[in-house]
Amino acid sequence: MNKDLLTLQETIAHLQAEIAGMNDEIYAQQQDITRLKAQVQHLNARVKSLQDGDGILNPADEQPPPHY
Image (cartoon, rainbow, N blue to C red; front, side, top):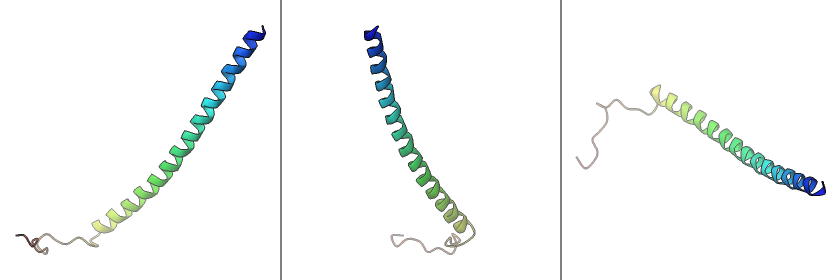
């Protein structure tokens, strides 16, 4: 009986350690997701501003590169 109880306690301790590790990984992934969402929003705003005509020249108005 004691051996079975000890085995269960060891299993529970192992599972608790695994859960703690998974929680740490999920927290890190959530931080990454939050950071990436902010970057995507920034890039979307930048693309939208470029599509609105800010910074994009008409191909006919652009000069050819110096090597041409």
